[in-house]
Image (cartoon, rainbow over the protein chains, first blue to last red):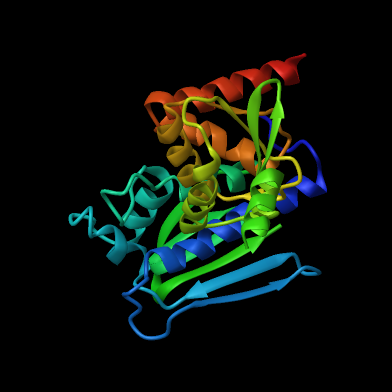
Length: 148
Length: 126
C-alpha cells in the first residue's frame, strides 16, 4: 500500500507517527519504574532536519526480559523489539508500534538511529534496510535520533 | 455541562448512508498513546449502539500512532462485534499502520483492516 501520497504532508504525518510512538514508549514502559530521572528529553532542529528523543528509563533489554527472560543482550532485545510482536507489558495485546516505525523508516525518507544499552539500530534516511549491531558505549535508557 | 456534553456528542457523529461516522478530528489532529486511544473510545461509547455499523473518518487528522489506533480500533471492534468500516483515507500514518495490523491481528479486527486495505487498494488501482 502506498502511503507516500501527499508529499510533504505525508512526511510530517509519518514523522509524527515515529516520534509519537517512540516518545510514548518511554512513558508506557517506564511508568512506576523510572530508575532516577523520569521523563523524556525532546529536541529538534527543523533546519538541520533531525529530531532527538532520550530517556533514562530501564532500556529495551530490561523491559523485554520481563517476557523474554532468555534474551542474551541488548542487540538481541532490539532485534526482537523491531521485528517481533512482543511487548514488555504482556499479557496486554500490544507490541506493534516499533514494527510500524521500522517499516515507515525503511521505506520512506526518514532515518532512525536508536541506541539502548550496548545495542544500536540504524536505518538510513534514504529508503534502506535496518542494521542492528553492538557498540562498546553503554546508553542508559534509550537515545534516538530521527533524520528526514 | 449537559449542553456541552450533548454538543460534543452531536459533533462527533453524523449519519451518512445510514451509518454512524466517527470523525477522528474531533479527538485532535495528532492522536498519540494507547491510554489516549482508550480514553477516546470510552468518551464515545455511551453514544454508540453496538448493533449499528460504524464508519471511521480520518479527514482532518495529521497523525495517528500505532498504539492509539490499535487501542481504539480493538475496543471499538469488540464493542460492535466487528461492525466497523474504515473510510478511504490518504492519511500516511493510517495507511502505514494498516498492513501491520492486518498481519498481526486476528478475528474481526483483522477483517476490518483487510477490508479497508482491499477497498483502498482498489481505489488506487482505479
